[in-house]
Length: 218
Ligand code: SF4
Image 1 (tube, rainbow, N blue to C red):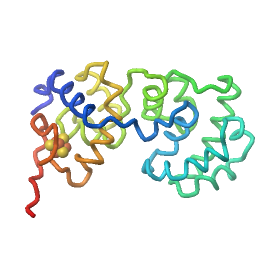
Image 2 (image 1 turned 90 degrees about the horizontal axis):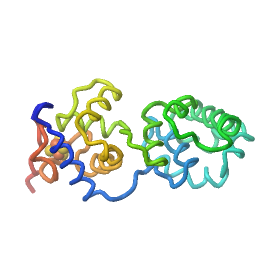
Image 3 (image 1 turned 90 degrees about the vertical axis):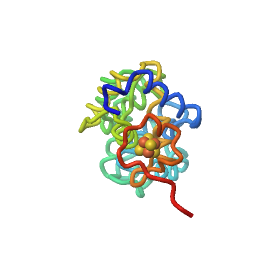
């Protein structure tokens, strides 16, 4: 199915089917703005499971932006030592905590421009925070969304920004927030990176992937 054949109705059907099957919230939707912001930052180029493993202790040690701002990048780094890129991330967490206290009265900002001014937060992270925390209609293109959008034939974009633009054109806005949450769960469960399990895929009938996998013989 080429992109021109992937009608808005088809894209909506896919997302609605996946939303019915995958009802859990997103891994980095951590229940409040501060934790979600820090979780999204820590999860860059790191598996969500690794972040979730260290997060309870991190949160006990640093319950507020003020506690992070009072600390030092090196002390913060010790709490996230198992996380990839921990040197840069600890500096970013320390700095953004000071910025949020100084410029946003201690509250996580709710616009993309303001979020992208914070160290460690790019467009993908900002979109995740806007959709998870502020219920805004954004599309967070992470590695799962990028891969699955290509397999479904919805985008040939070479960058997350281009994929985001393509998805914005073909998916009804009311469903944008569902894309990241459902595709992450679907990408782990069925449409896995190396070998998708197409034989048990609930959207195989509308997927244009050329190398669909058959059910293995037992
Ligand atoms: S049919 Fe296969 S490649 Fe297509 S969405 Fe399903 S699991 Fe992914």
